[in-house]
Length: 249
Image (cartoon, rainbow, N blue to C red; front, side):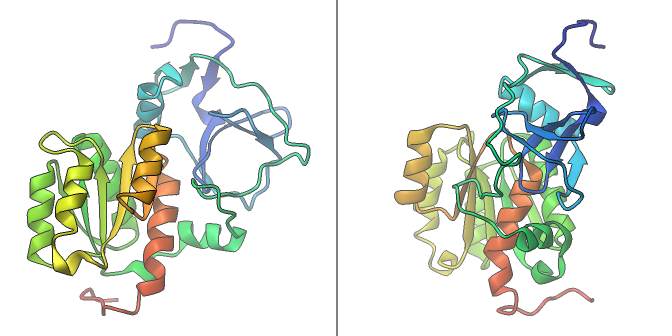
């Protein structure tokens, strides 16, 4: 239970994760939304899909030093972000790498699962809770999912058959992610495999991921599940017709 009566105690029903991946606080007086990490504000609109922050997402925020503790009723923050209006009353929709995103595409990525039905994916993460959370996103997209905890197990799976998507933590127990990427590139039939890397927010590492390792997406923690789904959907939907589904409709 949270006993600290600090002004930084936020009721759980005011903590949301938006469809563009933003962790947000909803202000009760005017329903405006405030980015939990940056303080940027924007007006509330029903078109902005959102869901209450889950225990997994709050645990991610705790590991990232944003949330001090939480229970079923509230979360205690280390600080409340400064309310930073951008002049227009809202922040633009952007990908993690800063690319503008169309609102219709944003909504489609959170509501349409048909485009990815039957796609094959592998998850490689140390943390069991993180694996389960990622699996829930891929299962909701009707993908075939295999989850492992080591780089070698993932490479073994990737050698066996072509895979559409690899979601991996950069820091695995048996091998660093960049070493794993090097071994992945040696497997001929992985040339079409999309790779999403999860890692701590380090600028130098992000530059390396996108320019040297040439992964398709780099998602810094705390991991936002809507943002993960957005990237998976955007990366794979264009090739949805390449391989027929093995599942019944």
